[in-house]
Image (tube, rainbow, N blue to C red; front, side, top):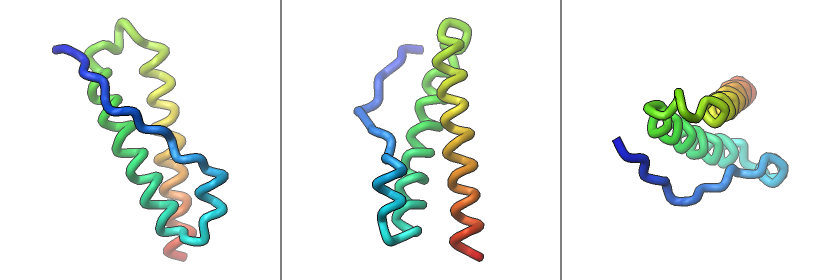
Length: 78
C-alpha cells in the first residue's frame, strides 16, 4: 500500500479561533481538523512499525483535539 500525501492542511490556531465570537465556528473548524487527523492516522497505520514517533505524535494530537471538542460541546450545550 503506497502512501499518498494529503494536500497541505494547517491546524487552526486556537488563539485566533478563540477570538472568534462564534463557538459554532470554533467547533466546526476543530471538527474539520479532527477529520483530517483521523484520515492521516488511517493512512499512516500500515507504517506504524517504521514511524512509531510520528504515529505517537499524531495520536497525541488526535487526543488533544477530541478532548477540546468534547469540552467545547459541553460548554456550548450547557
